[in-house]
Length: 241
Image 1 (cartoon, rainbow, N blue to C red):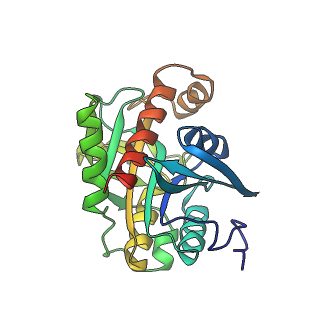
Image 2: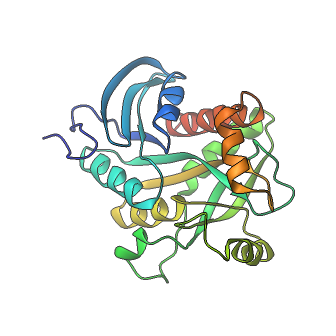
């Protein structure tokens, strides 16, 4: 039976999945694979299946924010998926993280709401070691600089006190912020699947969010190169073990 939101069934979905926000990004990630097949598109969900290193992989977009990501995670899991890596974007919370730099998230601050519908706030959001190690090994072998540590996931860019919040987490050593990673880690762990995230920095710390996101949408340079490196790291980690 086809899942109601993502529009695919268990005959179409592979065990290994790359998740991303933008439907256009799912197409770009799929272009890195062989024998690519378009599966379905509904709302924010656009899905492809292909092969990387001879291993079947599904790519699915899931829009902006944790609720839509959790829907994708749950429905893909019901179709047989067991390993998920999010290839996302983030804003830096440290000055040394440049545009197009990659962050492999080891854990996440749960400042989004979706994961709290599943479990209380004292449950940790943390990645699967095997997938984190696979991405780190690939990027190191390629000579790509990357950062590892804690990120923060939240529900709004436009709070009146957003700058104060960012400064607070900056002082705690948090590397960057997005809107989905902590929900992926929390719900994925509760459901018994492997989860990880690699984030491409699109906004420097203390820069304007709107300007940074607009730059990302138009860029052909460092930001798009960062996205491609992140996607390749995810694909290699999913298919090398």
